[in-house]
Image (cartoon, rainbow, N blue to C red; front, side, top):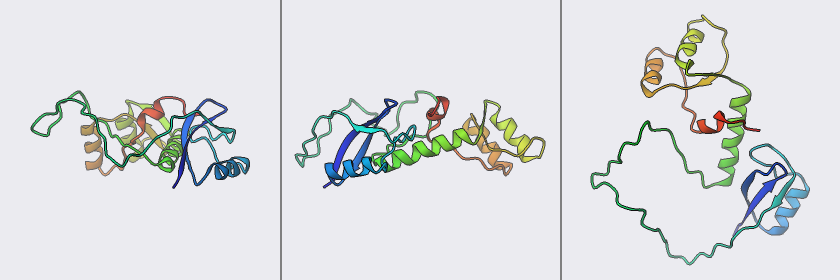
Length: 161
């Protein structure tokens, strides 16, 4: 059975860590093997956490009515979402977000135009990131311009330390 600890770093970032035991946590922290997934700090400590008791019964509170048709009401433009319950996956996504931010230019809403300029050798070849509608992304793909959706775009809008 794994121990799940709420952790924090010296920059006040909170995250979760899974360890075989409390002793294993201490061993890894003292060996600088635990790092903050947001800023990379090795100054990590356990935070207070409430115990979780597994009763074996799956409990799920009702969150309200849902449409009978299976369709969800439209509340604006849809964005990619994920639910990474695995701490290692969360860490990997944060590292990827930091890498993309550090190694690409943010061109904002000019993304479709700038991607075309780069593709057709009208601008220097470089990594860029920005915003594109679903239709704009489809048009770029039709032109043979390879782009990829970024499932953690909100992280890139802020400074990822």
